[in-house]
Image (tube, rainbow, N blue to C red; front, side, top):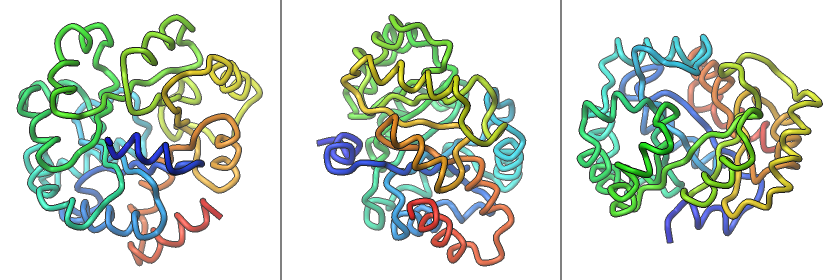
Length: 256
């Protein structure tokens, strides 16, 4: 069974952590991954830095710019991950933009994901119909899940279509803002979570954007299968004096 499906079958209140590959230093990618697993993170989204990010707030933009200056690329990332499955068991997802994957080659990308043990990808700017028409078979053949985002503005029919045609989980963006833009959950956001909940989707759902501490994590877990923390964690590792010690403290504090 796919690691993502196995995770959601076995656990509740999933904590997924996003950080940018190659940040704060080029060789930090895998050591951070190992520390996250040891500290209790359930799933990791590794950001592929891109020169023109669309949905990233200033914290993640800065991490991407730094990672690119450090020399991070998709080729370097796959090289870093080549032995990762001898060290790490939790699901790994790559998150980035379709232009980067196009340059690498869609088929080569999917095959490399399978080879190194990447379980899924999130490509926010990949049009859903284009995925169905051109890429779904390639990713399916290599056992790589495609995770798509929904927002408070996504029509119910489209949410159901995404749920029907994809596997892994549904990424529920908590608001239309960029990552890290605000803290706390509004009444409108809670109403959106409840609306999606009532659709009885076949895939599990994780909520991301605006979650960064124990309270927001626990609140979102009431409405979904877990939460995704990105900007707060990226900020932490960018400022950390004791990188791995502070990661352990952060994860333990969030999970309580």
